[in-house]
Structure formats: structure tokens, C-alpha cells
Length: 290
Length: 235
Image (tube, rainbow over all chains, first blue to last red; front, side, top):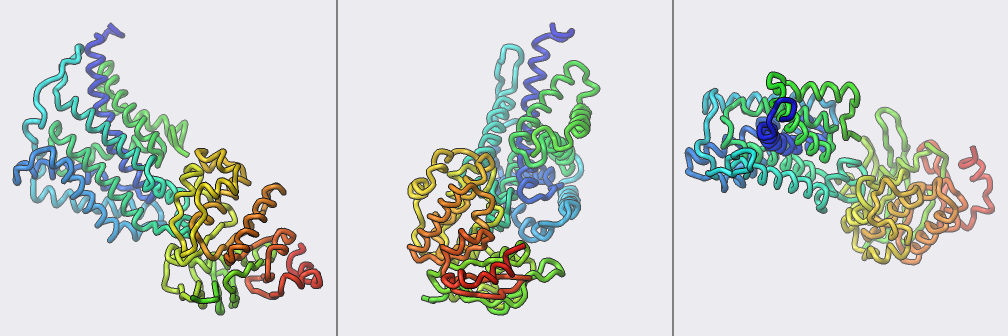
């Protein structure tokens, strides 16, 4: 017993917290990449998450496409929609005050959510049986096998995205453009395609997280909103634009939520925002901000 | 192949409403090394930025190796073969030395220096090849800024205050590099306040004042024209 809670109960909540934390980290990573390079606060990020999930649900319902092909198709489709929006609209607010990007992407959120509501209704849609059935006996809890797969898939997504930015040639261009776009252009690098590439990466990440989450949540027009708020909190606490900070904080917030659910459940929903307020008061640039 | 590397005709440029260049005319032949001399604020950095179309507003004619650049964006102009070393060095601090070197695409037709050749020229950089740019000393950063455009095979070098604030031993190394470019018949424009550094390397000296080129003389005549140094360089 730890403070009146059994080890099994604590470990189970921490496992669930880890899965949620990985989801927050992967979702926030896309937001952080877009903000870090484009300096745009992408309010539509949660909407792209929702579209990834909705495409997965619709793929199964209308086209009989199972989860696994949709894990590739949905992020690609939503990513291309993101690039179209970036090329036609968002590029017009580069270099302007943050408010312009925020209002523009908020507008897209309202339009897309409205369209989804009109076509699919307000209530959430259940995916049905998860793509992986069965359970995994962890000793301290029986974990549904798909939840274990979520750890692997989200972990791979986070490591993959981090590696693209930190360990590839394309990533070195992204980091250089983030630091000093004018000098990079003076050295002969056209940064316009980099911006579209960063937006594609960020949006596709959000959609991929939406795909992975779909079998365990109800997916509907407003699903993205609650996740968006946590993603914003994660990026702010981690330090705007810091990828490592975003990953660490995302996972940390999931675990803190898990602990709170164990010891004081009524506070579980607000603990993320309490942490955010404390960090902003003590470290306005976030825990890992530059 | 155009024998003129760079030609400016009645070039003006502005920062907002403030005019920084006034009807500048300049012709640079291939293989020439020219120093643009002048006090701070005389317009030398603006001149380089105007060549690369980095200014928010500019007018007049700029041609690089015979190509009119007025409809081009900065990366396209750079790819005509311009290697630009900005005044503030502007190496990428979060990238390693190796990543900084690998970043610049091929500029122009000239074969660039290989990474091994560059590390031979700048052995200090070789020792720090995996270090982040932000952890390098000022001299190392300057060497890296120069090395990355040497690697790109540029033909026209715009070097802005490359010797500023550096130890004499580093300045000597930079002098060697510019001499090497001279031997290879590269075209070099040096914006310098370190007059001793620049005059030995140059074929011609152009003096700028208040956004205009006010005098242009062969470097061999400078010792007989101390008045120019007095008028345009002394505070």
C-alpha cells in the first residue's frame, strides 16, 4: 500500500497515464514543429486530429478499409489538405502578429467542424472492435492488447518525428530555417517548400494520433477540442518550439494525470492546467524554452 | 560567358522610408578582388543585400554573370554562384559544424572544396566538427561561415567584415583563404573596415559614403591618396 492505494491500482493508473501521455506528446509534437518553424499558432491542430480519426472510422464504415491501411492513408490525406491550406491561406500570415495565424486557423476549425457536424451529426461515432483483440497480462493489470499496441505505435511516431527533425538532412534544413530563414535563403536554399513540408509533417502527425486514438474514443466533430487544449498546455509547459521539451512534458502530464486519478480523482481533469499555471508563473518560457 | 561578374546600374535601396543606397553604379570583372571601404552605416552591407535581393524595397538594375536578377527571389540569385558571408557570421547555432557545411547547396559551376580540403585549410574546425555552431568561438564561427560557401563552389564571394573582432592569427588565416580565392580567379567583394587587411588583397578600392560609391581607385594608388582614408574611413 502506498498512501492507502495498492501497488496494482497505482501501476494500472500509471500505465493508462503513460498511454495518454504518449498521445499528448505525439499530438503536441506536431503543434510544436509548426509553431517552431512557421511561428503560427495552429488552432486547427485538434481538427486535423479529429479528421484523421473520422477518416479511419469512415474508411471502415463506407469503404471497408481496416485500421492498418488507414494508419497510412488518413495522415497522408489530412496532411495534403493541410498543405493546401498552408499554401493558399496560412502563408499569407507569415511574419505577421501571432493573432493573425491563430484567428485564421480558428476559422478553419469552425468551418471544418461545422461541415463534419452537418454530414455526420453531433454525437461521436464508435469505431467498433479494436484492430488488435485479446489482452496482455502485465501482472499488476490486464491490459487490452490494443492499448499495448498504442504504446508501440505512439512511441514509434514520436521517435520517428523526432529523428526526422534532429537526425536527417531535411531536419537540419528545418532547424536552420527556424533559426534564421533570411540567411538560409541567402545561401541558396528555397525555404518555401520547407514551410509546406513542416506543415505537412505537423498535420500528418496530428492525423496519425487521431487514427491511433479512434478505436478507444468516440470520434465526432468536437473530439479535437479537448485534445487541442491539452496539446497547447503541453507545448506551453515544454517551452514553445522545443521538441524534446514537448515530448518529456507530454508524457509527464499523462503520468501526473494518472497519479492524480489514483490519489485525488476529482482533480484529474484540472491538474494539467494547474501545472501550466505554475510553470508560467515561475518559468514564463516553459521548462525547456530557449 | 559574361566577363562581367556583377553589374549595378543606378541601384537604390530603402529600409522602410529611409533610403540606404542612392543610385549606385559598379561593374566588377570576373576574377577581380574589390574592397568596398567605408564607415559603419555607409551602405556596404546594404549593397551586398541588394545584390542578393534581400532588401524590402530596391530599385535599379542588378545583373550577376550577365543575368538580370530583378524578377528573382534570393535563393535563385544565390544559385547564380554567389557565396555570401554576412557581417554577423550567421552560422546556424543549433547545427553541428558538419551539418552547417552540408547545408549549402551547389552554387554556380565552379567545383567546390571538399569537406576534407576545408578541414585541411581550417584544422580548428576539424577538431570541432561535431560541436554545435553556438559553442564555437568567434574565430571558429567565422571560419565556418567562410568554409560553407567555399564548399558550395561559389564564383562571386560577398564577404562582409570577415576580419572584424578576430585575433590576428585568425585574420592571417582569412587572408590566406582570400589569397587562395584570388589564385583560383574567383571574384571577391570585401566589405572591410580593417583597411590593412583589405588593401593588400585587392585590385581595386571603392569608397562608400552615405549610400553612394564616391571614389574608386586601383589598390596600387592608395598609398599616394591618404586623403581618401582620411575622408572616408577615419572617425
